[in-house]
Image (cartoon, rainbow, N blue to C red; front, top):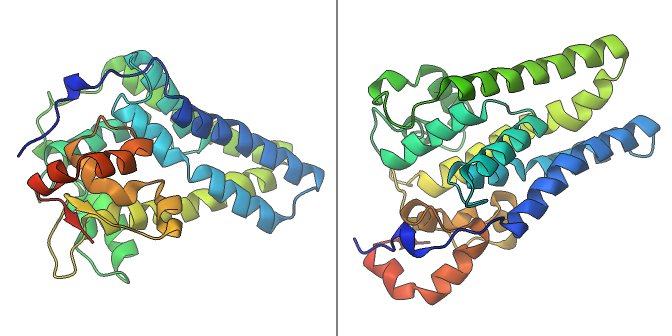
Length: 265
């Protein structure tokens, strides 16, 4: 396959477009919670705004996982860790390794953590998703593939502890209703939204099987919900391309896309 080399791209000091999304989520969620606490927002509006803001969480940790947010590796990790914590989906370094495993062994039924998740129909997908998360065996993956350092394990443990502390303290100090409507309910929705629009749709095939080289033209709603991951085939072949450049890349490199057998549906 003809592919662009990662070295051809000069990574920015800071990806400002992704930075705006991260800042919107990290600042926006507490602001929504404060407005709900003051009685300015009803619970349903709080859930809607919380879900819209939390929808940005995937892009935040995903770009950081691929070192696309900044040329400084440490800054990618800091942003990914903070964004994961703000969206109460901690464990950034563990999820980063899982995602990179998916890229390295995409389609391998023993090593790809995504593979079993898309072996389902639309109706059975939620159950299959939960079962696959519980049953995937990381022992099939070489230990030296992006190993998690001691410091990273401590960072993941710290983020897990902070989320637990937030929930417990909210119960004791009487603001659990804020945490529930701003973070917990939106997180429940986003878990399945991301799983379907970013995990299932880009990879599943109607006749069964597995596909990574796929572009879905997608209506605006799919592009909005998936934050351009309907162009997931581009991401798998050129993971160093930022999410907001997928469409420009597709327009300027139509021949390269054809050469790499990317399916456009």
